[in-house]
Amino acid sequence: MTVRLLAETNQGAFRRGESVILSYRVAEAPAEIVPVEGFYVRIEGWTKPDFRREMTIDADMRQHAGEPLSGAATIWTVPEDAEEGAYAVDVAPLAKGGAAAGAVCRTFFRVVGENDLLTYRIRKIDYGGYPIFLLDGGMSAEYAVVKAGEALAATVSPSWVTKAPGHGPRECVATPDFLLKSIEATVAFYDEHFGADAVYDTVFISTGVSSMAYMARTFRAPILPLQFLVSVDTAAELALVLEHARRHGIEAYSTLGHDTSVDMAVAWVKLLSLPPAYQRIDRRREPGAQAAQARRGRRAGKARRHFCAASVRRHRI
Image (cartoon, rainbow, N blue to C red):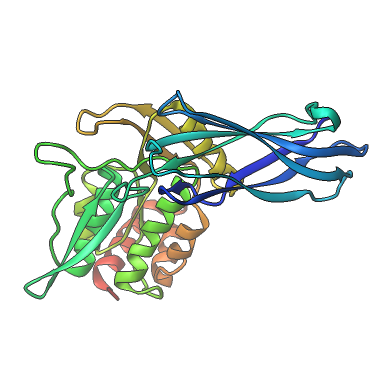
């Protein structure tokens, strides 16, 4: 068996003038000692395929079975004339004489402009003493979050900030950590505006069903989306988004397609299980509501009535 690496850049996105630092570590190694004298690195443009940069990183070390091997090196400083878009990074360990010592590991990063979105965001503005939430990026599932915020704050909000007159929402461009950042953005929105220790009678976990906005208002409950919308230039980016999430303990799948309101290709990245950040919010529900859910398996109808009644009767938010 050869050495198998895991590699990633220090950020998912870079602006011009910033340094791309590649970190690597051994995921699997053979039983015998393997001399690793360096790493072959190739940066390749995906959005603009005419870009290619190759280099060798010196690393005079020997990989022993069971020993951790890791390191980091600057592989590129993004020049001022760099094209915005996705860039693949291929890394392979090299043995003595430049021979391959293991399989190629792939990751990617993005060169972005000042106004590019890496995940959806919700801003709050003040209008005559009323808080107004503005959604930038995303579609139906992210829209459910801003509408839940509207219900919890007893205010109003528009649908989306549009890219331009006559256009749909702005794209959220892909980076390897897109799904993690989207989950973090959702939880941070509720914690920032309603308190990190807020107690909720009801928590909805939902896809982008349009009727969820009414459910959030009826129950005055937060909505945790099961999917997020991301824009990509290649299917390879999407595969690496899912792989990055899986390495961090989040199982997900995705569908890639097109929406006429968005200029780039879009993918719906969908969770297959509740991430830890969502579980922390769910554990803050009222004990009575939790008990009602637990009884639902034995007496579904009665439990459902009790659960709804409890949700309408008691509100901490």
